Length: 339
Image (tube, rainbow, N blue to C red; front, side, top):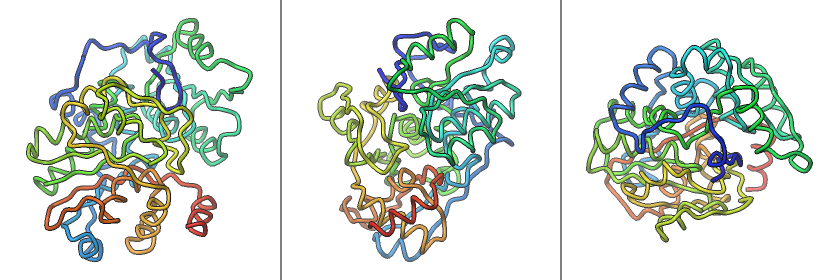
């Protein structure tokens, strides 16, 4: 199985194995305690214009205002904070070209844990600089000449570093579950919750919180049209893969859902929805222009189907997770011109 960034976790020890086969709301509650005073309790925004356009009462959980600009901080910090003293001394390693890299780097800095992030050559300068700015050592590699699996195995097995997965681990999922926990605590029960989905960590954690705090809420994951492996996985009942998916939503450009997230999603999700790149651009533009908030393409995934009237619902209380706001401004302007 590959991670969101292509890491074959099933073939190596991560150094942070857990015997948990699922995630409970007690795990989310424990993660919330670890994150208290560290993670931002992000705002929930409403818009009369958005409500009128969608025909529903919409609540936007704005993780674009989270530390390092995305929900990923929650899961990374929860995972790192649980390491024992020996593991902390040896340090951690992660592979990412985006939000997970920054989340692990910042969490390591806050906890005093050495972090090394493996990033592909040619990664966007803004992401590289942000990761280094949070204090991580960055190791660039050439995907055409080096084996990522061998490189990571060296970090874990020879150097003793702990590999931090982006989503396929109970501690990470529990941390992401605090997003929905906060949303339900603030606005009460919902009829529908829409959550961006790449590897499934945020979606599966949201499902765990919804089942505890709003049992009748229907939780949907939303994937990019060009990376709809989760849709296929639910249809077949088995994990499906899409190699090198193409979409502007780079945070959801995953080849497959994680094994643990899929086990939760398959059992409890109301379904999976998709959004085209064109829909993401239009949704982003609305959020930037009308609500005055910066959201990246992946962050707009949850709102896109509702904004374009594809759910066929009216008069309901709908929660939407805006998962992040880390976007290159030049790239965003290019998308808006193209859209």
